[in-house]
Structure formats: C-alpha cells, structure tokens
Image: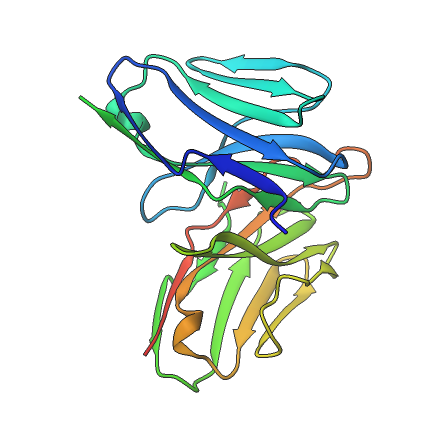
Length: 111
Length: 117
C-alpha cells in the first residue's frame, strides 16, 4: 500500500515559469513533510520541509503549501531555472522516525 | 564535516555472489536508513535503525537481504546470493531522531550502484 502519492511523474516548464508538484498521504500519524531534490548520480538532499501545524512555508523561490484536512501538500517553485532541473521527492515521516517517499517527479526547465 | 559515506560506489558482480555494502553515518546521528532506488519502484525503504537497533525491516525484499549495525558509526547491507533483479542504487541515510521530534532531515550518501550480471 503506497502511503504517499506524488504527481505528476514528469514536468516540463519554461524558464521563469512556476513548477507545481503535488503529494497526498493517508496516514494521519505523519508529522513531518520534507521535500528532497536529487541530481543525477547524487543522493537526495533536503530542499524544504514543513510540520502540520502551519499551512505554508517559504524559502526563497520554494514554497510548501499544506492542507491538513485534505491530507495534501505541494511544492511550488517560482521563477523556475534550468538549474532546478532534477528529480523531486516528497516524503512523510512518523514520530517513530520512519520516512516514506513519493515516487518522484522529474522536472525539466527549458531555457 | 564529512557526510554519510558509502562504499563501494560501484559494484559489478555475477549472479550468486555475495555483496556487502557499507555505510558510515554522520557522527552524532542516531538513526540510519537503507533505501533502494530503481526506475520501476522509486525509493524503497529497506530497513532502518534507531540507536543501532533495527526498528522496521518490513521493506527487506527477502531472506537474501540482511543488514547489521554493530555500532553507531557503521552499518552493512548484505545480499547473499545476489540476483540480477537486485541491480539498483542503494542509498544509506542518517538522521538525528528524538522522541517528540521524529526523524527530521535525512542526510543521504552518494549511493552504491550495484549491477548483478
């Protein structure tokens, strides 16, 4: 049973555009929702994260929107740049320490 | 500061051989995770440890896979015997876990790319 569903699988955006990636979860025990960015040949690295007591968190061009009642959260990348081209994973953690990842979204930003 | 260190970075072996992947977590971290990444299945959690104790190994595919964490600074993932379908990138990650704060951020190593012929 997949506990974190991520969409879309792939995304192509023009430079300067907005990239939006969505995730949905089922387990109400999740209490920490990070997004990871992965470049080819590298391990995933934390991009931004949110806890369920806030509805939005912004760091530079990256924003997480969180809807606790709908059990959904999304990543918005404003003014997308070619250097943002990577695979993005949402994840959800339980208090016991377990992290469950979505399937990933391959983002391509065209110059 | 050194990050999570994995070895080997690349391993090519023949079906039936034993494979051992190694991981050194970040000093001071008390949680360690082994993930497997493939195109078909994405990032799969195989097993994770808190304070060197295996907490959840439900993601380990079958008895051919085993993982150990003899101390806070070292873990191994062993596949015996290996099969072609085990070909994947295996990631080790560590974090600082505490009651009430969950796992927090995972710090990943650069992965071990395994090819089983």
